[in-house]
Length: 150
Image 1 (cartoon, rainbow, N blue to C red):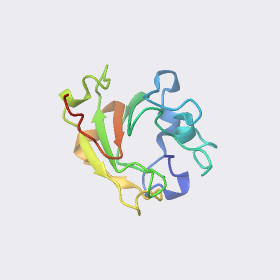
Image 2 (cartoon, rainbow, N blue to C red; image 1 turned 60 degrees about the vertical axis):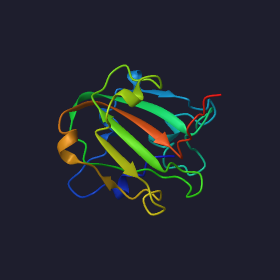
Image 3 (spheres, one colour; image 1 turned 120 degrees about the vertical axis):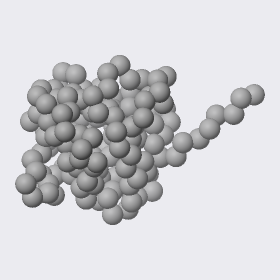
Image 4 (cartoon, rainbow, N blue to C red; image 1 turned 30 degrees about the vertical axis):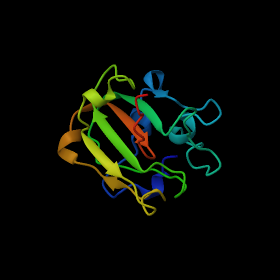
């Protein structure tokens, strides 16, 4: 998965890259060879050969703090139709989230990605939920699989 280039940003909106506090960015379950920097750093995210992948299963937990309060209007995600994320849950201003407690919080918004949106088309979010954002946590899920108790 990688972010779309600045050319696809909706009119009246700005790329939030300059507002990301990179010292606090985290991604749980990321592959060391396909890390989060491939998806959000300028120059990397425009390269279709670079992507973000999980090293364990279908889920990634991404934490993106900002260096000031922002308003989040939309997100853009690029990825292959067959292997790209299918569902992205966004959590606004949640701290200390991990895989053990992510289900304890309702998402601020849930985005179901289509082949069209996986080409980097911006997806408009529930704007009222993202007015005073200090940090965003996301969970990417290709398909959740229930683990059976044995």
